[in-house]
Every structure is written in C-alpha cells, then in structure tokens.
Image (cartoon, rainbow, N blue to C red; front, side, top):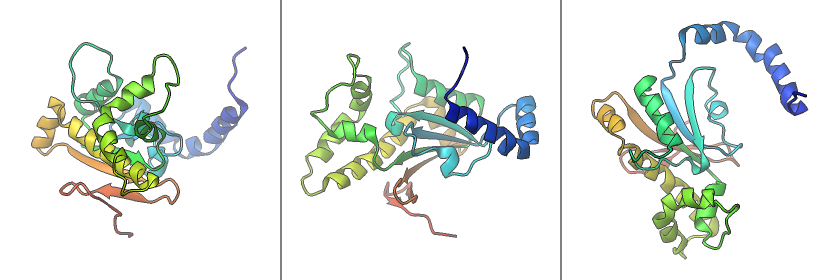
Length: 214
C-alpha cells in the first residue's frame, strides 16, 4: 500500500488548492524553460531554518543546498563522493548563479556537537562526528575560551563556521575565477531562530551586523 503521513498529504492538498493555484503559470514556465535561480543558499538542514521561508522565495528563485551545520569542505578532486561539492558545481557551472549565501543559524545541533568533546557517536559510522571534524581546530579554540558563556561560545562557532565555509568556497577554482571576474559574489548570514533576526556578515571585517530596517 502506497501512503504518506497524513499531515504531509494534508499539507499537499493545501498547497494544490492554495499556492499552486496562484502560481500555476510560474510552475508551467519553470517546467518548460527550466530553472534560472540567481542565488545559491548553503544552509543547515535544521527544520527551523528553511531559506525559502526566511527569504520569502517563490518557486525557482533559490537553489538550496542543505547539510549539517551549513559546511563547505575544501576543494578536493580525489574521486570520492562529494554531495556538497557536486551541488556547488552544478549551481555555479550549470545554473550560473550570481550569488552564494552561506546561512548559519542559532542553536545549531551540529555546532553544539562540535563543541562537545565528550559527545558519543550516534552510530558506528560517526558520520556527524567526522563531518564536524572539519571545524575541529576552531571548536577547540572556542571551547577553551573561559571568558564566554556556553551560549556565547555556541554563537561564536556558528559564525566562525560561516566564515570557514566562505573561505573554503574560494578554494574551488570555478568560484575563485568567477568571483575574481566580478560575476559571482559570496555572502554570509546568521539567522536567530528565537527572534527571527537575520545578521549579515560584513565582507571586509567578517563581523555580523543587522541590516537596517526599511
């Protein structure tokens, strides 16, 4: 028997009777012409920080890559499986996006795991532990800072991870070349789940600031 959880089916019915009805032409155009999003958003897979909702995006407007803690590993053409790199390659080389936004968020579970040196693996593969080891040097440095509270250490590493991912984006030749030509821009943002505030990274200082309200 083929079925989905009833809540999902109810949501789909609402989508078909609501949003799809108002955007039918848009969906048909996307089906016929393909997608041409201008922005790639690299975000955490946390259910509380969906880029399409936060940026009020319509269908076809954002190309979204989500993983644990919105991390981008360094460029490594080693023949292994690289889902993040594959999505990045497609967005930059095939879709020719003009902007890449790395968006982190508050209370990130992946970042919390990186800061907890005593955390036990969730499975024999320890996939989360291995993935978050990308941030190990930064996590060790932040963890040793006794001048900050636990919450401050968490926020600090969440924002460091955004800078880290942006730095790693520049190790990809396609990104570095296009950014150098002025055809691609890189941005960082941090979303506060509890308040809904979005903090944007200053590209010159690396600090995070709240944009002026319109």
